Length: 45
Image (cartoon, rainbow, N blue to C red; front, side, top):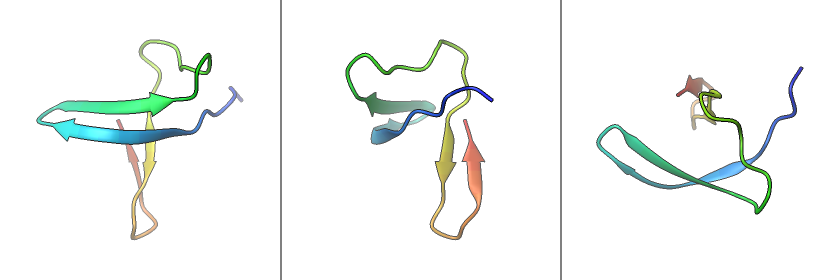
């Protein structure tokens, strides 16, 4: 299983989601971003 990186959503403008990751720990292009929702569901972007 690939390493999971933790990021923080900075903003959402239409279809664009701006996510900040710690320096040097960015996911590869085309990797999925999984968001934990308040109701326990998981949203995959």
